[in-house]
Image 1: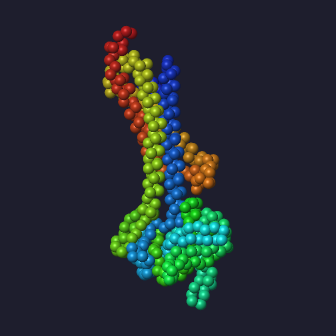
Image 2 (image 1 turned 90 degrees about the vertical axis):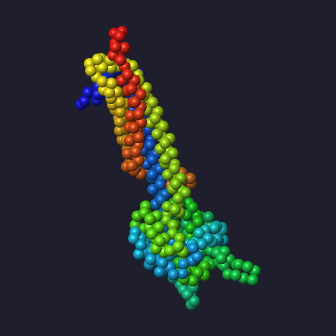
Length: 414
Protein backbone atom coordinates (compact mmCIF):
# COMPACT_ATOMS: atom_id res chain seq x y z
CA UNK A 1 0.00 0.00 0.00
CA UNK A 2 1.56 3.28 -1.09
CA UNK A 3 1.80 6.36 1.10
CA UNK A 4 -0.97 8.44 -0.54
CA UNK A 5 -3.52 5.62 -0.50
CA UNK A 6 -2.72 4.80 3.15
CA UNK A 7 -3.27 8.43 4.27
CA UNK A 8 -6.47 8.73 2.15
CA UNK A 9 -7.90 5.59 3.71
CA UNK A 10 -7.04 6.84 7.23
CA UNK A 11 -8.72 10.19 6.54
CA UNK A 12 -11.81 8.46 5.17
CA UNK A 13 -12.22 5.87 7.93
CA UNK A 14 -10.87 7.74 10.95
CA UNK A 15 -13.27 9.07 13.56
CA UNK A 16 -13.47 12.82 13.00
CA UNK A 17 -13.98 15.66 15.38
CA UNK A 18 -16.49 17.18 12.97
CA UNK A 19 -19.30 14.61 12.65
CA UNK A 20 -20.95 16.84 10.05
CA UNK A 21 -18.13 16.10 7.58
CA UNK A 22 -18.67 12.36 7.99
CA UNK A 23 -22.38 12.87 7.37
CA UNK A 24 -21.67 14.76 4.12
CA UNK A 25 -19.30 11.99 3.03
CA UNK A 26 -22.00 9.38 3.71
CA UNK A 27 -24.56 11.45 1.78
CA UNK A 28 -22.09 11.72 -1.12
CA UNK A 29 -21.66 7.95 -1.28
CA UNK A 30 -25.43 7.46 -1.02
CA UNK A 31 -26.08 10.10 -3.71
CA UNK A 32 -23.76 8.43 -6.20
CA UNK A 33 -25.30 5.02 -5.38
CA UNK A 34 -28.86 6.28 -5.88
CA UNK A 35 -27.95 7.98 -9.17
CA UNK A 36 -26.23 4.87 -10.55
CA UNK A 37 -29.12 2.62 -9.44
CA UNK A 38 -31.71 4.90 -11.03
CA UNK A 39 -29.77 5.06 -14.30
CA UNK A 40 -29.35 1.29 -14.52
CA UNK A 41 -33.03 0.55 -13.79
CA UNK A 42 -34.42 3.22 -16.14
CA UNK A 43 -32.15 2.28 -19.05
CA UNK A 44 -32.84 -1.43 -18.47
CA UNK A 45 -36.59 -0.79 -18.63
CA UNK A 46 -36.22 1.30 -21.78
CA UNK A 47 -34.09 -1.43 -23.35
CA UNK A 48 -36.81 -3.91 -22.42
CA UNK A 49 -39.50 -1.79 -24.08
CA UNK A 50 -37.30 -1.39 -27.18
CA UNK A 51 -36.61 -5.14 -27.39
CA UNK A 52 -40.22 -6.16 -26.79
CA UNK A 53 -41.57 -3.62 -29.28
CA UNK A 54 -39.10 -4.79 -31.93
CA UNK A 55 -40.04 -8.44 -31.32
CA UNK A 56 -43.75 -7.67 -31.66
CA UNK A 57 -43.26 -5.63 -34.84
CA UNK A 58 -41.08 -8.31 -36.43
CA UNK A 59 -43.65 -10.91 -35.41
CA UNK A 60 -46.11 -9.36 -37.85
CA UNK A 61 -43.88 -7.73 -40.47
CA UNK A 62 -40.88 -9.13 -42.30
CA UNK A 63 -37.24 -8.02 -42.09
CA UNK A 64 -37.11 -6.84 -45.72
CA UNK A 65 -39.84 -6.04 -48.28
CA UNK A 66 -39.33 -6.08 -52.06
CA UNK A 67 -41.70 -4.36 -54.49
CA UNK A 68 -41.89 -3.15 -58.08
CA UNK A 69 -42.18 0.55 -58.92
CA UNK A 70 -44.40 -0.39 -61.87
CA UNK A 71 -47.02 -2.07 -59.68
CA UNK A 72 -47.86 -5.72 -58.99
CA UNK A 73 -45.11 -8.25 -59.75
CA UNK A 74 -46.07 -10.77 -62.45
CA UNK A 75 -42.96 -12.97 -62.49
CA UNK A 76 -42.68 -13.17 -58.72
CA UNK A 77 -41.43 -16.78 -58.77
CA UNK A 78 -38.30 -15.71 -60.66
CA UNK A 79 -37.83 -12.71 -58.35
CA UNK A 80 -38.07 -14.99 -55.30
CA UNK A 81 -35.37 -17.24 -56.75
CA UNK A 82 -33.07 -14.22 -57.11
CA UNK A 83 -33.86 -13.11 -53.56
CA UNK A 84 -33.11 -16.58 -52.18
CA UNK A 85 -29.68 -16.56 -53.85
CA UNK A 86 -28.60 -13.50 -51.85
CA UNK A 87 -26.26 -14.18 -48.94
CA UNK A 88 -27.92 -13.68 -45.56
CA UNK A 89 -31.47 -14.43 -46.78
CA UNK A 90 -33.23 -17.22 -44.86
CA UNK A 91 -36.67 -17.37 -46.52
CA UNK A 92 -39.07 -15.37 -48.69
CA UNK A 93 -42.81 -15.35 -49.36
CA UNK A 94 -45.13 -13.44 -51.75
CA UNK A 95 -47.88 -11.18 -50.43
CA UNK A 96 -50.74 -8.98 -51.58
CA UNK A 97 -51.54 -5.71 -49.81
CA UNK A 98 -54.65 -3.56 -50.15
CA UNK A 99 -57.04 -1.44 -48.10
CA UNK A 100 -60.63 -2.58 -47.69
CA UNK A 101 -63.81 -2.05 -45.70
CA UNK A 102 -65.15 -4.89 -43.57
CA UNK A 103 -68.82 -5.18 -42.59
CA UNK A 104 -70.39 -7.65 -40.19
CA UNK A 105 -73.96 -6.42 -39.90
CA UNK A 106 -73.10 -5.14 -36.41
CA UNK A 107 -70.42 -2.70 -37.48
CA UNK A 108 -68.18 -1.46 -40.26
CA UNK A 109 -64.43 -0.81 -40.07
CA UNK A 110 -61.55 -0.05 -42.38
CA UNK A 111 -58.77 -2.63 -42.56
CA UNK A 112 -55.55 -3.60 -44.30
CA UNK A 113 -56.08 -6.85 -46.20
CA UNK A 114 -53.03 -9.03 -46.81
CA UNK A 115 -52.98 -12.07 -49.03
CA UNK A 116 -50.36 -14.59 -47.87
CA UNK A 117 -49.13 -18.04 -48.82
CA UNK A 118 -49.47 -20.13 -45.59
CA UNK A 119 -46.86 -22.75 -46.54
CA UNK A 120 -44.09 -20.13 -46.88
CA UNK A 121 -45.41 -17.21 -44.79
CA UNK A 122 -44.73 -18.94 -41.45
CA UNK A 123 -41.03 -19.13 -42.39
CA UNK A 124 -40.83 -15.35 -42.74
CA UNK A 125 -43.23 -13.89 -40.14
CA UNK A 126 -44.27 -15.28 -36.75
CA UNK A 127 -47.99 -14.97 -37.44
CA UNK A 128 -48.83 -18.49 -36.21
CA UNK A 129 -47.52 -17.61 -32.70
CA UNK A 130 -49.95 -14.67 -32.56
CA UNK A 131 -53.07 -16.67 -33.51
CA UNK A 132 -55.16 -17.28 -30.37
CA UNK A 133 -58.05 -19.06 -32.15
CA UNK A 134 -57.76 -21.16 -35.27
CA UNK A 135 -54.67 -21.83 -37.34
CA UNK A 136 -52.76 -20.46 -40.31
CA UNK A 137 -53.44 -23.71 -42.17
CA UNK A 138 -57.19 -22.97 -42.03
CA UNK A 139 -56.70 -20.33 -44.73
CA UNK A 140 -56.06 -23.08 -47.28
CA UNK A 141 -59.02 -23.22 -49.73
CA UNK A 142 -61.30 -26.18 -49.03
CA UNK A 143 -63.98 -25.86 -51.73
CA UNK A 144 -63.33 -24.78 -55.30
CA UNK A 145 -66.02 -24.03 -57.88
CA UNK A 146 -66.07 -25.27 -61.45
CA UNK A 147 -64.20 -22.16 -62.61
CA UNK A 148 -61.57 -22.53 -59.87
CA UNK A 149 -63.17 -19.83 -57.72
CA UNK A 150 -62.80 -20.37 -53.96
CA UNK A 151 -66.32 -20.96 -52.64
CA UNK A 152 -65.83 -20.52 -48.88
CA UNK A 153 -62.68 -18.40 -48.37
CA UNK A 154 -61.34 -18.00 -44.84
CA UNK A 155 -59.94 -14.89 -43.15
CA UNK A 156 -57.80 -14.14 -40.09
CA UNK A 157 -58.54 -10.84 -38.31
CA UNK A 158 -57.08 -9.01 -35.31
CA UNK A 159 -58.75 -9.28 -31.92
CA UNK A 160 -59.47 -5.53 -31.72
CA UNK A 161 -60.97 -5.56 -35.22
CA UNK A 162 -63.17 -8.50 -34.21
CA UNK A 163 -64.34 -6.59 -31.14
CA UNK A 164 -65.15 -3.51 -33.21
CA UNK A 165 -67.17 -5.61 -35.67
CA UNK A 166 -68.84 -7.61 -32.92
CA UNK A 167 -67.81 -10.96 -34.41
CA UNK A 168 -65.97 -14.06 -33.25
CA UNK A 169 -64.35 -17.21 -34.59
CA UNK A 170 -66.61 -18.93 -37.16
CA UNK A 171 -68.72 -15.87 -38.07
CA UNK A 172 -69.07 -14.50 -41.61
CA UNK A 173 -68.06 -10.98 -42.63
CA UNK A 174 -68.23 -9.01 -45.88
CA UNK A 175 -65.03 -7.60 -47.32
CA UNK A 176 -65.52 -4.63 -49.65
CA UNK A 177 -62.83 -3.46 -52.05
CA UNK A 178 -63.09 0.00 -53.67
CA UNK A 179 -61.25 -1.26 -56.78
CA UNK A 180 -64.17 -3.16 -58.27
CA UNK A 181 -65.55 -3.56 -61.73
CA UNK A 182 -66.20 -0.65 -64.10
CA UNK A 183 -69.90 0.06 -64.83
CA UNK A 184 -71.68 2.66 -66.98
CA UNK A 185 -72.14 4.81 -63.86
CA UNK A 186 -68.52 4.50 -62.73
CA UNK A 187 -66.40 2.19 -60.60
CA UNK A 188 -68.49 -0.18 -58.48
CA UNK A 189 -67.05 -1.62 -55.25
CA UNK A 190 -66.54 -5.38 -55.13
CA UNK A 191 -67.64 -7.38 -52.10
CA UNK A 192 -67.26 -10.99 -50.98
CA UNK A 193 -68.20 -13.08 -47.96
CA UNK A 194 -65.37 -14.51 -45.84
CA UNK A 195 -65.55 -16.82 -42.83
CA UNK A 196 -63.42 -15.98 -39.79
CA UNK A 197 -61.09 -18.97 -39.31
CA UNK A 198 -58.74 -17.37 -36.80
CA UNK A 199 -58.23 -14.48 -34.37
CA UNK A 200 -54.85 -12.74 -34.09
CA UNK A 201 -53.52 -11.09 -30.94
CA UNK A 202 -50.11 -9.51 -31.54
CA UNK A 203 -50.26 -7.14 -28.55
CA UNK A 204 -49.91 -4.11 -30.85
CA UNK A 205 -53.20 -2.19 -30.99
CA UNK A 206 -52.50 -0.72 -34.44
CA UNK A 207 -51.99 -4.18 -35.91
CA UNK A 208 -54.80 -5.93 -34.04
CA UNK A 209 -57.25 -3.19 -35.07
CA UNK A 210 -56.45 -3.07 -38.78
CA UNK A 211 -54.86 -6.28 -40.10
CA UNK A 212 -56.73 -9.07 -41.87
CA UNK A 213 -55.17 -12.06 -43.66
CA UNK A 214 -56.55 -14.25 -46.46
CA UNK A 215 -55.01 -16.87 -48.71
CA UNK A 216 -52.90 -15.52 -51.59
CA UNK A 217 -55.07 -17.26 -54.17
CA UNK A 218 -58.25 -15.82 -52.62
CA UNK A 219 -56.72 -12.33 -52.70
CA UNK A 220 -55.72 -12.71 -56.36
CA UNK A 221 -59.26 -13.74 -57.26
CA UNK A 222 -60.94 -11.09 -55.12
CA UNK A 223 -58.78 -8.25 -56.51
CA UNK A 224 -58.64 -9.68 -60.06
CA UNK A 225 -54.82 -9.67 -60.05
CA UNK A 226 -54.39 -12.91 -61.95
CA UNK A 227 -51.02 -14.48 -61.14
CA UNK A 228 -49.52 -11.28 -59.73
CA UNK A 229 -48.57 -10.15 -56.22
CA UNK A 230 -47.91 -6.81 -54.52
CA UNK A 231 -44.44 -7.73 -53.30
CA UNK A 232 -42.17 -10.23 -51.58
CA UNK A 233 -41.39 -10.42 -47.87
CA UNK A 234 -37.92 -11.58 -46.87
CA UNK A 235 -36.46 -12.96 -43.64
CA UNK A 236 -32.73 -12.44 -43.04
CA UNK A 237 -30.32 -14.28 -40.75
CA UNK A 238 -29.19 -11.19 -38.80
CA UNK A 239 -31.85 -8.53 -38.24
CA UNK A 240 -29.18 -5.88 -37.54
CA UNK A 241 -27.71 -6.45 -40.99
CA UNK A 242 -31.07 -6.18 -42.73
CA UNK A 243 -30.10 -2.82 -44.25
CA UNK A 244 -27.00 -4.36 -45.84
CA UNK A 245 -29.01 -7.27 -47.25
CA UNK A 246 -31.59 -4.79 -48.57
CA UNK A 247 -28.87 -2.79 -50.32
CA UNK A 248 -27.45 -5.99 -51.87
CA UNK A 249 -30.93 -7.02 -53.10
CA UNK A 250 -31.46 -3.55 -54.56
CA UNK A 251 -28.27 -3.97 -56.58
CA UNK A 252 -29.13 -7.54 -57.62
CA UNK A 253 -32.75 -6.87 -58.70
CA UNK A 254 -32.13 -3.59 -60.50
CA UNK A 255 -33.56 -0.09 -60.43
CA UNK A 256 -37.11 -1.17 -61.29
CA UNK A 257 -37.52 -2.70 -57.81
CA UNK A 258 -37.67 -0.93 -54.46
CA UNK A 259 -36.36 -2.63 -51.30
CA UNK A 260 -37.01 -1.52 -47.70
CA UNK A 261 -35.77 -3.03 -44.45
CA UNK A 262 -37.60 -3.07 -41.10
CA UNK A 263 -35.43 -0.26 -39.71
CA UNK A 264 -36.47 2.07 -42.56
CA UNK A 265 -40.15 1.18 -42.20
CA UNK A 266 -40.12 1.88 -38.43
CA UNK A 267 -37.43 4.56 -38.39
CA UNK A 268 -39.54 7.25 -36.70
CA UNK A 269 -40.62 4.99 -33.84
CA UNK A 270 -37.19 3.58 -33.01
CA UNK A 271 -35.50 7.00 -33.44
CA UNK A 272 -37.92 8.44 -30.87
CA UNK A 273 -37.14 5.60 -28.44
CA UNK A 274 -33.40 6.12 -28.90
CA UNK A 275 -33.72 9.88 -28.33
CA UNK A 276 -35.80 9.28 -25.21
CA UNK A 277 -33.14 6.93 -23.85
CA UNK A 278 -30.39 9.54 -24.39
CA UNK A 279 -32.48 12.29 -22.75
CA UNK A 280 -33.23 10.09 -19.73
CA UNK A 281 -29.52 9.29 -19.37
CA UNK A 282 -28.67 13.01 -19.35
CA UNK A 283 -31.43 13.91 -16.88
CA UNK A 284 -30.62 11.12 -14.41
CA UNK A 285 -26.89 11.92 -14.60
CA UNK A 286 -27.81 15.14 -12.77
CA UNK A 287 -28.39 13.01 -9.65
CA UNK A 288 -24.74 11.95 -9.79
CA UNK A 289 -23.71 15.58 -10.37
CA UNK A 290 -25.53 16.62 -7.19
CA UNK A 291 -23.63 13.89 -5.32
CA UNK A 292 -20.41 15.21 -6.89
CA UNK A 293 -21.04 18.63 -5.37
CA UNK A 294 -21.37 16.90 -2.00
CA UNK A 295 -17.97 15.29 -2.63
CA UNK A 296 -16.52 18.77 -3.31
CA UNK A 297 -17.96 20.24 -0.12
CA UNK A 298 -16.89 17.21 1.93
CA UNK A 299 -13.29 17.41 0.68
CA UNK A 300 -13.09 21.18 1.16
CA UNK A 301 -14.23 20.84 4.76
CA UNK A 302 -11.81 17.94 5.25
CA UNK A 303 -8.96 20.12 3.95
CA UNK A 304 -9.90 22.82 6.46
CA UNK A 305 -9.97 20.22 9.27
CA UNK A 306 -6.65 18.63 8.26
CA UNK A 307 -4.71 21.87 7.66
CA UNK A 308 -2.15 21.06 10.39
CA UNK A 309 -1.78 17.47 9.17
CA UNK A 310 -1.11 18.70 5.62
CA UNK A 311 1.47 21.19 6.91
CA UNK A 312 3.25 18.50 8.94
CA UNK A 313 3.26 16.11 5.97
CA UNK A 314 4.82 18.83 3.80
CA UNK A 315 7.36 19.65 6.50
CA UNK A 316 8.31 15.96 6.61
CA UNK A 317 8.99 15.95 2.86
CA UNK A 318 5.63 15.30 1.16
CA UNK A 319 5.49 17.06 -2.21
CA UNK A 320 2.62 19.10 -3.65
CA UNK A 321 1.82 16.16 -5.95
CA UNK A 322 1.62 13.82 -2.93
CA UNK A 323 -0.86 16.05 -1.13
CA UNK A 324 -2.97 16.49 -4.28
CA UNK A 325 -3.00 12.73 -4.85
CA UNK A 326 -4.15 12.06 -1.26
CA UNK A 327 -7.36 14.03 -1.72
CA UNK A 328 -7.92 12.83 -5.28
CA UNK A 329 -7.74 9.25 -4.04
CA UNK A 330 -10.13 10.03 -1.18
CA UNK A 331 -12.67 11.51 -3.60
CA UNK A 332 -12.25 8.51 -5.87
CA UNK A 333 -12.82 6.15 -2.95
CA UNK A 334 -16.11 7.92 -2.26
CA UNK A 335 -17.07 7.75 -5.95
CA UNK A 336 -16.05 4.12 -6.40
CA UNK A 337 -17.86 3.09 -3.20
CA UNK A 338 -21.06 4.83 -4.33
CA UNK A 339 -20.74 3.42 -7.87
CA UNK A 340 -20.22 -0.12 -6.57
CA UNK A 341 -23.23 0.12 -4.27
CA UNK A 342 -25.25 1.59 -7.15
CA UNK A 343 -24.27 -1.21 -9.53
CA UNK A 344 -25.23 -3.83 -6.95
CA UNK A 345 -28.50 -2.05 -6.19
CA UNK A 346 -29.36 -1.53 -9.86
CA UNK A 347 -28.66 -5.16 -10.75
CA UNK A 348 -30.62 -6.42 -7.75
CA UNK A 349 -33.64 -4.21 -8.49
CA UNK A 350 -33.64 -5.22 -12.18
CA UNK A 351 -33.56 -8.89 -11.21
CA UNK A 352 -36.48 -8.34 -8.81
CA UNK A 353 -38.50 -6.56 -11.52
CA UNK A 354 -37.73 -9.33 -14.00
CA UNK A 355 -38.52 -12.21 -11.65
CA UNK A 356 -41.50 -10.99 -9.61
CA UNK A 357 -42.98 -8.35 -11.99
CA UNK A 358 -44.58 -6.45 -9.11
CA UNK A 359 -45.00 -3.24 -11.16
CA UNK A 360 -48.23 -3.60 -13.16
CA UNK A 361 -49.21 -1.38 -16.09
CA UNK A 362 -52.81 -0.55 -17.08
CA UNK A 363 -53.72 -2.73 -20.08
CA UNK A 364 -56.01 -0.07 -21.55
CA UNK A 365 -53.08 2.37 -21.83
CA UNK A 366 -50.03 0.18 -22.54
CA UNK A 367 -49.69 -2.92 -24.71
CA UNK A 368 -47.78 -4.58 -21.83
CA UNK A 369 -49.04 -5.57 -18.40
CA UNK A 370 -45.63 -5.49 -16.63
CA UNK A 371 -42.34 -3.65 -17.03
CA UNK A 372 -39.95 -5.40 -19.43
CA UNK A 373 -36.33 -5.35 -18.20
CA UNK A 374 -33.17 -5.97 -20.20
CA UNK A 375 -29.74 -4.94 -18.92
CA UNK A 376 -27.00 -4.32 -21.47
CA UNK A 377 -23.34 -4.53 -20.48
CA UNK A 378 -22.48 -1.44 -22.55
CA UNK A 379 -25.03 0.67 -20.62
CA UNK A 380 -23.82 -0.59 -17.22
CA UNK A 381 -20.18 0.04 -18.19
CA UNK A 382 -20.99 3.56 -19.43
CA UNK A 383 -22.91 4.40 -16.24
CA UNK A 384 -20.10 3.13 -13.99
CA UNK A 385 -17.43 4.93 -16.01
CA UNK A 386 -19.41 8.21 -16.04
CA UNK A 387 -19.98 8.10 -12.27
CA UNK A 388 -16.28 7.56 -11.55
CA UNK A 389 -15.21 10.31 -14.00
CA UNK A 390 -17.64 12.79 -12.41
CA UNK A 391 -16.32 11.84 -8.96
CA UNK A 392 -12.75 12.34 -10.19
CA UNK A 393 -13.55 15.78 -11.59
CA UNK A 394 -15.14 16.72 -8.26
CA UNK A 395 -11.80 16.15 -6.48
CA UNK A 396 -9.71 18.50 -8.64
CA UNK A 397 -10.52 21.80 -6.90
CA UNK A 398 -10.28 20.58 -3.24
CA UNK A 399 -7.03 18.68 -3.93
CA UNK A 400 -5.55 21.75 -5.61
CA UNK A 401 -6.45 23.92 -2.62
CA UNK A 402 -4.89 21.36 -0.23
CA UNK A 403 -1.69 21.22 -2.28
CA UNK A 404 -1.34 25.04 -2.17
CA UNK A 405 -1.09 25.14 1.64
CA UNK A 406 2.26 26.43 2.95
CA UNK A 407 3.59 24.72 6.14
CA UNK A 408 4.82 28.00 7.62
CA UNK A 409 1.42 29.65 7.24
CA UNK A 410 -0.49 26.67 8.62
CA UNK A 411 1.77 26.20 11.68
CA UNK A 412 2.51 29.89 12.45
CA UNK A 413 0.13 30.12 15.40
CA UNK A 414 0.62 26.58 16.76
